[in-house]
Length: 98
Image 1: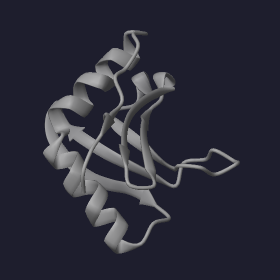
Image 2 (image 1 turned 135 degrees about the vertical axis):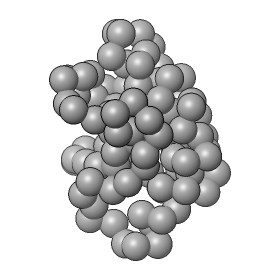
Image 3 (image 1 turned 45 degrees about the vertical axis):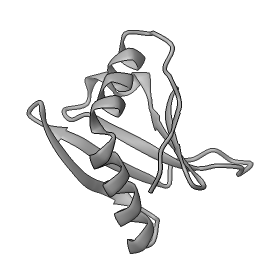
Image 4 (image 1 turned 120 degrees about the horizontal axis):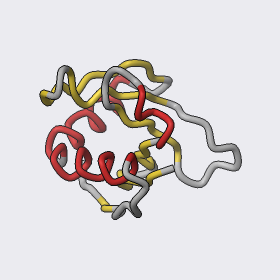
């Protein structure tokens, strides 16, 4: 699992097995929980172009909006870290602001 960024109480992650999915995306996990399961999936591109949108989410509208805005601001960093994950390289984790 490639950890990409921390945002408040959330951890943004890319999963190496997702390399075969038709669109790049990230999974959102809640930090500090015992059971690590994705609470949101957010597309970050479509046809190789930046396109940030929620695929599925168990979060509030406010949290979804905050996460999407942060991804928009840090898109280049996040996209590069996803590439690193897919190449089997170590990712850099960044604290991003809302």
